[in-house]
Length: 144
Image (cartoon, rainbow, N blue to C red):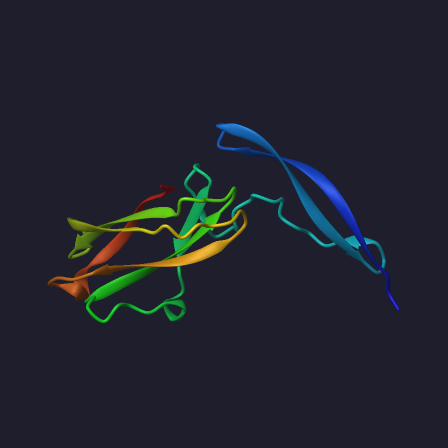
């Protein structure tokens, strides 16, 4: 039978030279004494873009959200909060028609608080012509 121990480690996290934070992470050690690698608390997942304001985002998998029936097209955005976002996030997409011409935007605000270390998915919709050629860029993600 292997034993399980818990070790608390303090790490320094520097975010884009804006501020330095000290975070505590719990590391579980199992049999043989090898540490399981754990990201420091407050670190965004590797595949998320860090907006430098405590929120990180990436596109959500297509099968993880549903479009509203009224929308001609929609995009799911996964948002991770490093420090918590008690007022809820604001997300802005810039929309492009024909792949290059800016043709508008889609924005979404929610009062849904995000706890530190939590990930949520917001769905932003589009109603209009040329849905087959509309693409989107994540322009802004921040706490309201």
